[in-house]
Image (cartoon, rainbow, N blue to C red; front, side, top):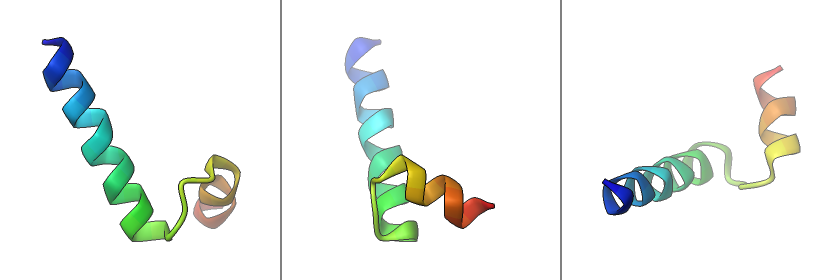
Length: 33
């Protein structure tokens, strides 16, 4: 379960990075509005 959760978080981070071009949470929130 732990490994699956970690993999899910990594995949989510990668998706966010691809979509927004940044892992900076403040920038992501600003882009979302």
